[in-house]
Image (cartoon, rainbow, N blue to C red; front, top):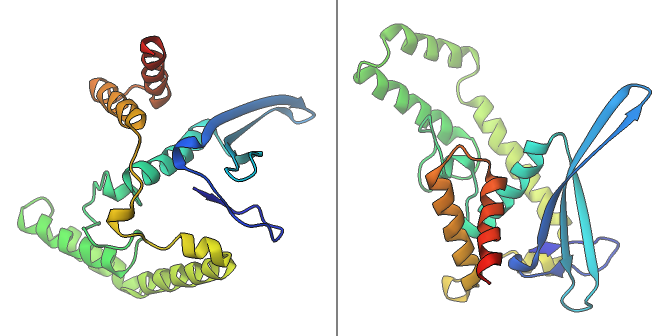
Length: 218
């Protein structure tokens, strides 16, 4: 992972498996009542200087703090860019689509609408309502605007990246990809097995059990 400390300092690049993460919760009484604060903490050591660094990202709630870390972990360990790559209940994401909603989303939705009508899932009335709604909503113009905004944001973000970090962010050929350690593979397999046994179980409890068995067998 790469961290930009700002202030003209060079980016800090650390191995993914060396990053520590935790969720914080604090509460206190004020004149307006009891207030709670949550955050996602990240800690790492600069490989070049040995200096410890800590970050805390405020979050509105505990589930969102844990969800942010799970999003980072899914991206780093499984290269998951969007939720639709794991679960796409509406069938609006296809292989090769960009990781955001755009004109392609509109066309997927229209094809899905006609497929459901052919299969008898919906009637002609719902099909008509879909077309009336999107005609009133200016058809594909909102999707084009969304894509334009995303491109503008991406272009602005690229300008703010230091040159060294921008070069580091470029895709590498598969032959140069870093391979996960045996420990990470073993723990990930335990987590997946425990989650399969009880999908409704909190992910925090699953990780705790996986690490507990790892500690006991070590």
